[in-house]
Length: 363
Image (cartoon, rainbow, N blue to C red; front, side, top):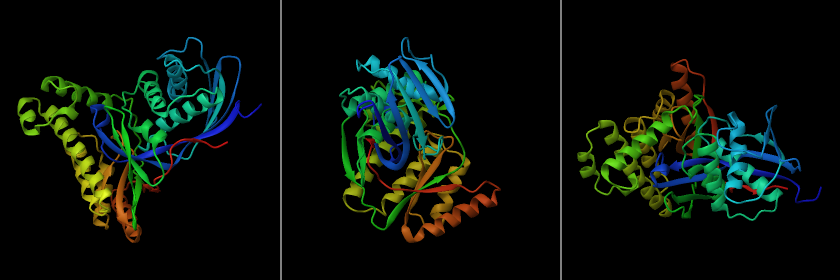
């Protein structure tokens, strides 16, 4: 086979520095890509079959008649990409794709979006289809929403496809417009703490939060919660205390994204820690998506010398990030480990998050 019929691609996972549950409210997010992600090796095939391999599992999907709901489990994500590409008018055919990951699944680092984006690059390259990366973001989102049944926004796919090394991506989830913000951490580091609690975005709780936000926007007469300008006045119009909490989180979280961008551009990295902790408290108390291991990790890390920290991802499990001076990292880890041990919890896993390039073809 020649170079157009075989190849290897990589799509990274992401850390969302700040801006949680704002994406499907058409708000602002600030993710960066990780070095870790999903790698796929693949080649074309001429029988209209999508053969998928991952961790000893094999799934075969007929492309003819592929539609939402026809494929279940992990294979729905890459199969959904093939289906969404066809819906968007991109002509791709069968392929054998072999996936490998160094990204923990369910840790809130967006392994599902990395899987989608790696598949999108592989299929479009294999069939020499020219597609703008912003269009592939929407293709990957369509795969996750319609084929995998997860009502996510465009945060994860945008981070995987659009990020650059040493930068965060300021993304407006309404317009799809983005700008790159230098992420010069200096002597500070972003440490990912995998709490070991696994979550699934298709268990209904994520969708419930989205539905609550949509109902609040309807009651307030705005297209989305990013359009709420008078927070106090809007809260006074809502009777349901749950909806009031959801609105307060989304509006203040958008403000925290803007403040964090300002701090980064001013080189005030340590001060960013307070924004992270404020975000965590809002996610815990107002959006109610945190979990005990995340709360303990944030509190212990700050007591151990971190500048701040917060849960990341959809919630109910996954990871926490903390910002700390590199010399304080051992003390931070020791404090978190001790807090877990005191509760007879398994020790968490740690990963230093390095702002890395977006998805690319490796060979």
